[in-house]
Structure formats: C-alpha cells, structure tokens
Amino acid sequence: MANVTLDWLRIIALLGTIQGVFLAGVLAAKRTNRTANRLLAVLMVSFSIFLATSVYHVAGLEQRFPHFFGFGHPQVFLFGPLIYLYAVFAADRNRVFTRRDALHFLPFFATVVIGLPVYLSSGAEKIAFYNQIRSGNEPLHLVIIDQLKLVSGVIYSVLTIAFLRRHRDRVKESYSSTERVNLRWLLWLGASAAGIWLMAVMFQVVGFTRGDDYISLAISVLVYGIGYMGLRQPEIFRFETAEYPVPRLQTADVPTDMTLNTRANIPANTAADEKMDGAAEPRYERSGLTDREAGRLKDALMAVMDNERPWRDSGLTLADLATRLNTTPHKLSEVLNSQLGQTFYDFVNGYRVREVQRRIAAGEARALKMLSLALDAGFASKSTFNQVFKKLTSQTPSDYRQAADA
Image 1 (cartoon, one colour):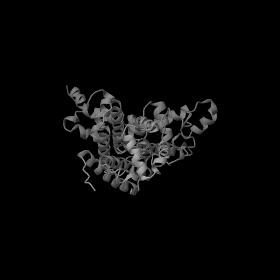
Image 2 (tube, rainbow, N blue to C red):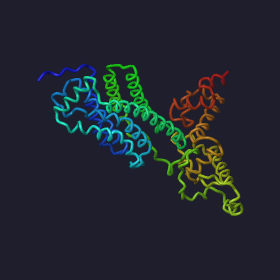
Image 3 (cartoon, one colour):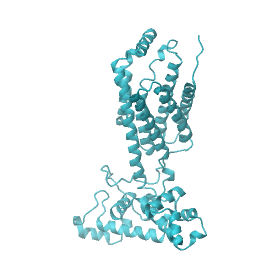
Image 4 (cartoon, rainbow, N blue to C red):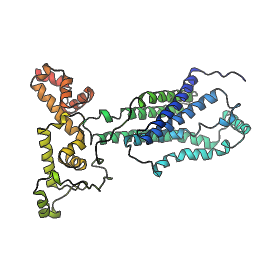
C-alpha cells in the first residue's frame, strides 16, 4: 500500500474535520438552547464530512475505499439551511422545530435519493463512475445539482443576513443595552458563510481549477472560528425579560390574546370614561389602548423617567419599565411607537445622552473621564455610548465636549 502524501491545504482540512467532530460533540451536549446547538452540531458534522471528502479524493483513496465515494456530494445542501435555522433558533430559544422547518432540507434529501443508484452500486461500479466523471463525462443531473448548490447557498446567505437585520431591530424594542443580546457572533457567522458562497460563485465563473481547495480551506477556518467564537460564550441571546414578545408596528402577526389586567396603571376615572366614550374613541388595533389611555400611559412614563431615572440602570428592559408602570410590555411598546415615535432603545438612550450633555455643560467632564460619565448615565460600554451619542447629536462625545468648553 503506497504512502499517502497530503499538501498543507489538505492537512488543514483534515484538522478541520477533527475539530468539527469535536465541536459537534460539545454542542450536542450543551443544555442551553438545545435546538439551536443541535442544529449547529449537525452543521459541524456536515462540514466535517465535506472536508474529509476533499482529503479522500486528493489522497486517491477511491480505489481502496470506493464505498465512501459520494458521501460529501449532498452535504453542501445542508450548509445554508442549517446556518439560517441556527440563527432563527438561537434568536428564540422557545421556538419549536416544525414540519415547515423540515422543508428546508428537501434539496438535501432529494439529492440523496437521486444518488441512490450510485450509493447502492458495487465498489467496482463506483470506481468506474468516478473515472467517468474525471474524464469529463459528467452526467447532466450532476451538473445541474452543482449549479443548484451555488444558488441555494446564495439564497440562504441573503435570508440569514436579512433575518439578523430584522432581529436587530426587534431587539431594540425590548432592550436599552444590547451588549448581552448582540448579534455580532451570528452576523460574523452569516457574513463568513456568505463570503464563502460568493467565493465559490466567483471560482465557478472564472473557471479556477483549484477552487475546491480554497473552499475547503475557508470552511476549515470557519470551523475553527465557530470553535473559538461560538463556545466561548454560554448563550448567544438572552431573551428572558419580556413576558410577551414585543412586535414591531409594521408586522401583522401580533398576538391578540394578551390577558393581563392593565387597569392598574390608569387613573380611577378611566373606566367611567370608557363607558361614556364607548366605541366612539378610537383604539390602537394591536394593543387595545384608546387615545386617552395611551396619553395617560405616556404621561406616567415620562413622570417615571424624569423622577425615578430608571435609565441609569444599564440593564433596563422594556419589561422592567412596564412593571414600574403596572402595564404590559406590549402596551408600553405601542405607546413608545405611536405616541413618541421611538423604539425603546432610542427612547432610553436619549435620556442617557442628555444626562451626559448636562454634566458636560456643568463642567464635570473636566474632572471625570467621558467613559465615567457614560457609565454613570447607564451606558454599558464605550462603543455603544459613542455610537448612540453621535447618532443623536451628530457629534462625537469628544467634539461635543470641545465645543462646550470653547
């Protein structure tokens, strides 16, 4: 038996295969957000099979182990759906896997079914089929499948990034600080996968003969990146604060079965006012609040923000503030959007920015660092403070302080 020699690209791919199998075991054993972690574990196994297949072919092992031929062929159809579904389930750990979710895997199973005649053939027949492909006589259905892989990858990359962008906006409906619920990890994963797919498309267009080698290298790097970034944090999202999910105003799938009693936040004469007004007073379709109720809740909200200053708590959430007002997150979100035209994130951080501005104007920035002012006002990090401050004032904190001192 001749010795097998591997170049550096294949050694990296082989190490990536081993790393992927290890990660799959660790992820499958994690108890937090099990569905998401199991989807990621399956993705790691799929990556490992794909990488092992590249080593298998370069090492010329088809003649010795023909029955492994074709194992990696359908795996590519799993990459896009698994990354997309992982993002969806990581964002909502209470979500249940449904039959509709399973539809994403139909291309994979269809490819397996199409390949059954090859998988069930003898070793000699598999070797002959492989030699036929190497000679340039590739069956038409394989050519079509290879093109569909690229289409699938690009489509799922777009879906994943679009979902994460929408989810980023939804996060700001419930949280005043997004450091603990940020999307950087998933955005990194989605963008990396998109980059690999775009690279594959480019190699296909220009006819680069070693494209598969560099795709395997990129996937190996992605596997190691997932190991470093994915496992160093216990959870990706921590949506634990809101009793009810807070929908965006433009969505149509808003829950209508809110049953919490919310009269406690309304002055005593409100019930009588409702009887007098009856159906004549318009109500907000999604929350059930009348204009008068919404106005009173807004007044109560502003009083709490001005007098109790809850915005100084960097972990303040929509649910926390709703509890102070003895209402539901859903109704409070409705008031913020309809009465104030702001997300919860922008509303709370506006108070924090104005507090920093006030202290700068009072000359406190001369004795304290800007970061100290930001943390005292409720910001959780310097990067968020700089970003929000510039968004609301069109100036960086340093520029604002210099202008105030001039």
